[in-house]
Length: 185
Image (cartoon, rainbow, N blue to C red; front, side, top):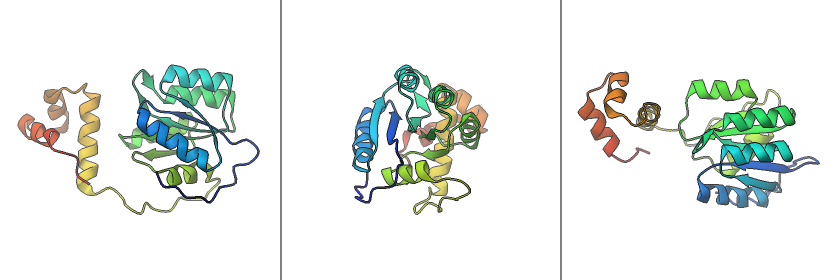
């Protein structure tokens, strides 16, 4: 996380709900967002996120799409119902157009792929109207995009190599070699 000291104008309510099951990432992001003036509350699951969204709906939220106990979009729905003016950013390690569209339809303000730094998240939370965000400074390489797609299909197939290879129209051994390697940068 980048420690920039310029504080954004958050308005009268700077409450922020962070929902992510990656505990170290959640702690680092919470600390970074507090330094930027947000009043942060964290949750590590869909159940905890929905409970907080119901009891104390935040003005801002950053919600991970895939959580151990379900889908982060369920938290987005509860928060949108309780607080229609909330600015919500959905984060995921498995960026896909279909999930981005679903997140926005349900009420997310923006959608970012992990890893996203605190400055990018703040910018996504505070961008309003027709302001288009600037293009990313370090976009993913074509190899990384391919690797992310393979990983997403592999996860959707419940980590079944044979089924993933069939869906990707790829030889099973080739897929096994790709999965055994580290992710490209």
